[in-house]
Image (cartoon, rainbow, N blue to C red):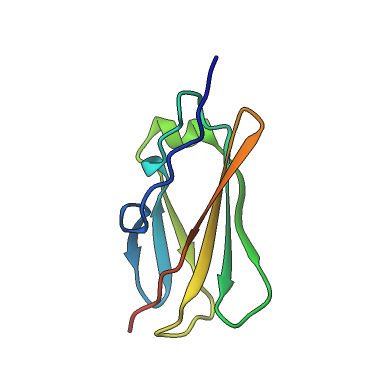
Length: 107
């Protein structure tokens, strides 16, 4: 089976809701490139902080393909008007594709 790299969704497509306490990611906006997604990893870093926080590790790809999978990330504690980076790593056929998103919380 020939697979191409998965197509990274735009920030406006994957980040369906952002407020001061959570962000919702529409994981089903990833296009697989012809082969099934094996897993997703999601990590978060607050701007100015050196630490990356693993949000979800090895979310099975078949879970995402079964439903309109929305991953809601809750922030405790979190600050209003804060910018952060989210990385989403997709595994397909033992290859990884990483995307970066930089949303900001709202009031």
